[in-house]
Image (tube, rainbow, N blue to C red; front, top):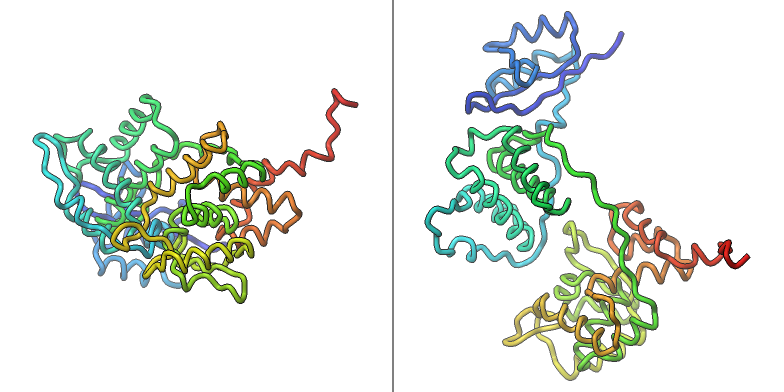
Length: 375
C-alpha cells in the first residue's frame, strides 16, 4: 500500500493565521480533510486550510493518525541561526532618536532579537534591512504584506544593483519578523533567493604573510596578526580569546563560542607561544588576551587597521584584511599536504564542502600541469 503524506504550511489569510494542508489528490485524504471543522479552500495558495489554533493542530495529528504521515518540517522552527555567545548590546537601537516620517523597527522585533541572543553584527544587519523594507511600504500595515509585496521589494533591490549577499540579508530580516516574531516558521517558503556567488578567497603568499608580521608596530600587534594566520582564527575569535585559552603544554588554542556558537581547538605555533609569553609578562591582560583602554575588549576596527597598516608598510598592494590571513592559513596547510578533513576541524567548518573552496586556490594543484605554451 502506498504511503500517504500531508504537509502543513503556515498561511496568512485575511490577517488570520491558518494551517495549510498540502497533499497529492487522494480520495481518502480528500474525505478526511473535508471532515475537519471550518476547513476552507484557498485559491491563492491552492490548498485547504483551517484556523491556526493549538486545538486544530492537535486535531490534525489525531485525525490522520494511521492513515497519513503528517510532515511538519515546514511548520515548526529548526535550529536558530546567527546566535553567538557574546555580550549583547541592546541599548543603541532603543535609545535612537526617532526621525519624523521614518518607521522604526517594532518593539516585538527588537525584543525577539534580544531574547534569541543574536550576535551584535547580526542584530545591526537585521534591523537595518528590516527598517529599509518597512519604510518602502511605510503607508501599509505589516500584516497586509504578502509574498508578492516582498518579491516587488527584492526586485527593487536587484534593479538598484544590490549584491546577492545584501538581498539574502534582506530576505532573512523579513522572514525573521513573519516567521520568528509572529511565530509562523517557513511562512514565506515560496520566496526565491538569488544564486549564491561563488567567489574564490583571496590568499597571500607565505613571504607576504611574514612581511606583514615583520612590519607590525609592536609586540601586541605582532601577536594579533600572528594568531590570525597561524591559528586560522576569525577576527572576533581572536578578540574573544582569554589567557587561559592558550594551552602551552598541548600546543593548542581553545576557541570558545566561535561561529555557530561552537567550541573547537586549533594549532598553537611554537614561535608565537614564546612571543605570547613575552607579551603577557609585559601587558598583564586581566580578562581578554588583548585589551584596549580601561581593560575593555579590543575593537574589531583596531585589528583591521593593524593588518592594513602593516601590509602597507610591507609594500603589499593587495587590499589585505584579517580574514585574508585565515584564508592563507587554510590554503598553505592544503599546499603542504594536510588532509582537508583536518583543515575543516581547525577552521570550525560544519562541512568539508565549505573547506573545499581552498582546493581552487592551492597552487600545488597546478604544479603538475604542464602549460601548453611551455611544452
